[in-house]
Picture (cartoon, helix red, strand yellow):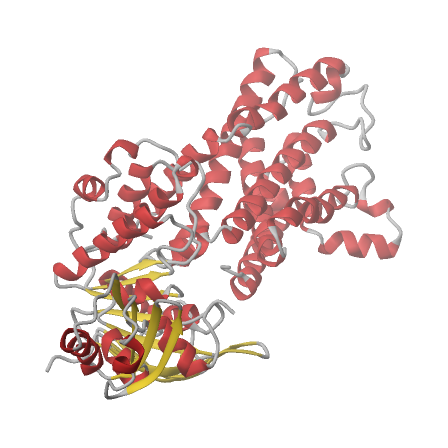
Length: 251
Length: 306
């Protein structure tokens, strides 16, 4: 993994030099604060007698939705960068050095994880500053659960990045694959209420486990209650890694 | 004799149903500038990338600095420097960042990065983003990256394509410097003039096969022994005298302008001897020597630009 830290640091600097780089990372924070201001005070609470137990206005739905959107934007950005690098011959040029292929790709994952982590921390700070979190929200556990989720979703991003034909299609194809997954994730309607076929589909989608983990942690459930979700996310990560290592194209 | 820096025998490589390299064999000697010459699509880049270990051949054996480029790819990459055709870097990476990143990747104590930028005339561009560099500056940066680990063997793929003649000449000088440091250079080009002026030996490649290998001058002698002389004279007796020159193949006359074609190195001397013996006064005299371009035309039956 020689060169990993230098390459990661360089990729972060290069990302921040993009016209929309730093500002792009701040947009979710601003949107979050604005949305949170408009919501009833209890909407961002862990539990509340005034909230329905599930559904769009159930506890945790809004923060989990925003988290998913942040995770997806990180993944789309990864997919786009990888495909631009591939099209421009940058990946090939890096590979013609003693850099191991895994180092090059790990640097990109680390970059995205770090930037996502910064966004999450800013969100938490903004949430505290503006008192939008209701009582009883375990913000740090939630942040950790979110990072774990982003990590496994990034491996899906790699599968997409491996197969998109050109940089022009990277963003739309990625969006088309990822956004609809939110709809079947049990975020708005519990999976138990799905018709059987849709329920079965939801159970093989990684977002289902992301949502289950994030909602649970937000509502104050312990990690132990979500061992299955964590296992599913680790499995997703491993499968994503194996598939993309088989089909990844360098040029 | 030292073992060759590169040994390739019976290399074959196809992409799906498209055959890129049919059957290529060649040896590159240590310390020489060796060129793969041929039109676009002849299989030059594929051959080079197989030798660099970036592609796995379908068939054939390759040895580079005594290593197998597929099995020993990481050991090999420590000892070679590579410039790829049409490569890019991150748009917003700074020149010094790229050079320092590359310098950190090699086990070997690299050449001083800043000294290298100086030598390649990039010192004042060290803080510039890659996307703001001109074509020539980008190529010089890629040369810097290829030289950063002081490699024993340097690969240069279509190094001067798209550059203006002045930038091209400057880059040729850099390549000669690499040879002067005792390193070996393996390059590809579709520019016959570049091959002829820069390479110690060339392999002419056409449709994935080597047509011939040798020093440019030797290839010209072997395949294009014709010499041409163009002269201007008002002397009325010139035509009769010139026709008696030995080894004259043809004589064209347009007004006072004569074009003579003959075979062999002695032909030009014979023409000069004839003019002096017959006291024929000429107002212009020039010899036209065949070039590698003519060799290519002769060997393949078409021009490289077709």
